[in-house]
Image (cartoon, rainbow, N blue to C red; front, top):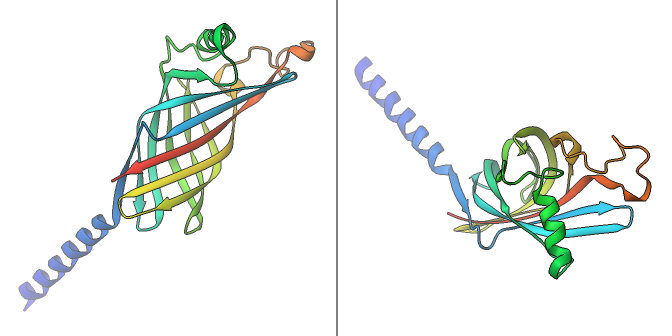
Length: 197
């Protein structure tokens, strides 16, 4: 009788473990359809552009986001509000040592550390953002739309303090007398992740 009870218990544990594993789905980012827009403000206006993902994935447990991570290809950075030589000059500056030092740090990354589900399709995401080899925790709200074999995650107006990543060029926090040449410490990210099973 003891052996029979033990076998039943083991079968129940195995079935429960299998069921638990089956509830978690991994959705891989479609790097061609996903996009990240950046917006950098300054006294005289702002500049905009895009960067692409190298790879990424999100983990869902039924309808709840459980985790995930993605890598940003910094070499893919573009400027969209300017054209011609003006766009190339700004892009060259952003790629250089004053800003993202892309030759030394060709990739940035984000890894989810905590998810607070606010509604079936909304969550507050906390994670580690790494830029120029420096990691800081950030939090932002996101909306999620899960389909049978797809998942879309949207996050708007995600604020990133560039000075925390040793990007101090024309920052009022470090150069108080810079006047109307100042660039905002925070830049904005608008994230659109399109993922597939």
